[in-house]
Every structure is written in C-alpha cells, then in structure tokens.
Image (tube, rainbow, N blue to C red; front, side):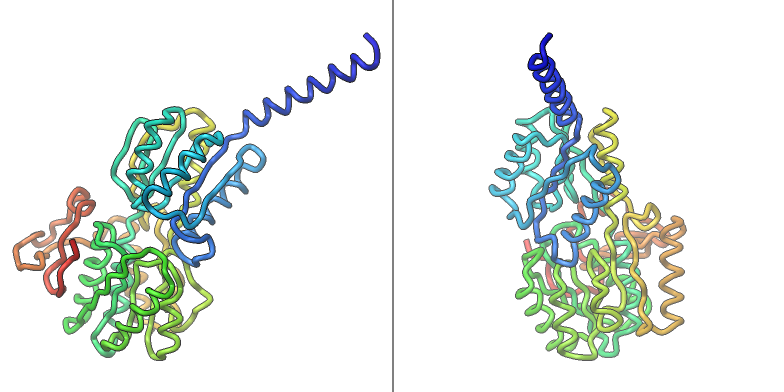
Length: 357
C-alpha cells in the first residue's frame, strides 16, 4: 500500500468516525412563544436549555426558535425541526398543543414534550408546574401588603392554568384580608410589553396598589415603578433587577432538572410518554427572595406556607370553598382533586366579573 492509499484510508476512517459521532449526538429542539430575553417565562425555559448544554456538553446539540406564534407558524417550525434531525422537541406554550400533536403524528420516531397541555400520544409527553402553589403565597403577601384593599391581576388567556392562579391568589388574599377586592384585566397575550404596561396602568388607576400578573414581560414592574407606591411580583423568573421595590417576591419556574432528566431518558432509550405536574415540593416552582419591603411577620407567615405546601401538609385548594355563584364546591377540610384543577373553568366565591369564553 503506497503513501497516497494510506492517507486516503486514514481520511476515510476519520470521516466515518466523524459521521458516527454526529449521529451519536442527541439533538434537542425548543420552541418558544416569546423572546429569550423576556425576563420571564421564555427566559426561564431558555435557562433550562442552557442547563442541558452545560450538563451534557458535546453529547447534545440544542436548537431553538423564539417568538413563534401559536398556530400554523408553530406547526411549520416544528416540522422544520423534526426534518433537521431533532430527536426530542420541547414546545413551551399552551397554544402549541394541537400543532405538537399534528407534527408528532408525522414523525413517530421523534419525541415531543408539550408544556401546560393535556393531549398526549406515544411520542408526545406533557409537563407543567403547579404555579397555583406560588400564587397562594403571593396572595397571602398581597392581602397583607395592600392598603387600598384593591389587588390588580393581569391575566393572559382564560385557560385553566390562569384561572387556577387567579383563584388561588384570591383565596389566600381574602383569608388574611376580608376586605380585599380583585380586579382582573385579560390581556389576551403571553408577551406584549405595551399591552401589559397599559393593563398595569389601568389597574393602578382603578386603585390597585398591588399588581399580580400571568404575563411574561417586566413591563408591569416598570409601570408600577413609574406610578410609585405600587407593589408587584415577578412572574416565571425572579425579575430581580426591579428589587427590592416595586417587586417584592417572585414565582420562579425551574425547568432545568426536568429538561436534563428527559434528555437523559432519550439518550438511554428509556423515554416514554408521560404527564408531569410538579410544584414547590419537587423544586419545579420556587419562590424568589421576599424583599425587605415585606414586614418580618408577613415574611415568616409566607415562608411557613411555602414549607407546608412543599411537605404536603397544606394544599392551596382546601375547603370550605364555594364557587362564584355560591354553590358548594369543597367541604371543610376537603382538598380539590387534580382533575377539577386541570379543567378549572370557574371563579371561587367573592371574585367579581365573568371569565371570558
């Protein structure tokens, strides 16, 4: 064998080895509803993606698409990711549910995971966090902190996840402040800083001195800071750049452990379609630092509630509770079942206004 043949053989061997390594690398895709710099929901999902890269190193390649509208655009993006060789794709917004199911049917060898949805298939799993646990803590603090007795709530879309949060926050604000009122504005967006700022401003003009939100930008914090003497809570991430005032605490979505576990399952060949719904106890929901703007006794009460929820000693939806129209829902000491919570489409007694249809 001459030198040229040896070099050619070596090159071929290196090329084959490179191809094998490329084939062995697991490719993981993420589809985001907002920009990764939103400071909230998408920011935390992207933090999970970065944690996957750090944990697995060269064994995994991640790709992502941000600011993908829910609907036909999502189906197009998912199809492109699947065609590009993705082994696992995370779709991170409720409105991606049907596009995920549709594309998964066309790519049975690709694994899909859909956040906050309820439709599954052999190659589609679902996952979410019990955000309502964090809302209970926020409600307790808000009920203690308000001086006007008016708490504003910026809601995104009238889906069970958002309705659960409103109910949970209201129940716990009302427990500590019987005079409290909730004013809810539906923004019909997950991320639109202008709309979110307008909603916050409108609530402040209606007398709200505490603002809660189930939208993803920091615009409500900016509006509260401008108004002065209005407190807010971070949504999905700590939003700590607005600490200590007006942001007095946060719900933090911690997706990293889940993403790492599910990618590992794909690598190991043990991935199966499943439904995960974890909360404070499992560490999927965290409560950000409670700032010094909150009195020490209120902070201690909130921390005790966090501990009780984490241990399972307390459930935020524990009776007696009635529905908005006064009909009984939960008897004394009775705890809501997951099925009812997952499909929640009603307000609890005391909340005013109607849920949009």
